[in-house]
Image (cartoon, rainbow, N blue to C red):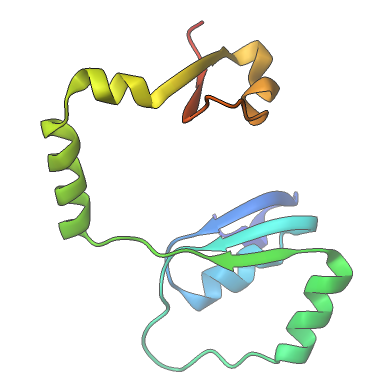
Length: 124
């Protein structure tokens, strides 16, 4: 199923294919106030031509956020996995400074002075 076939709108789109048609189709399903994150680089031809004025107008009037993020390559993933595997388990456990049960998930969004990483515990 492609985004254009959905019969509902979405709040968040994470586009990770790098295919312009997929990104365009997904963006049409965003609600006003929605967020779209681009995580892949589009490549190949033809280049995507964008009317920046129309894009700006649509984003501002619909209060839509569009942002991109950089993904690491496989080499970086492997290096991070190796570093975590070699790390002291007690040090790693210390990174999680607070666990919150699912029923109280909103409290995880309130940053405490000692917080490093807050986890929503689905099993609690």
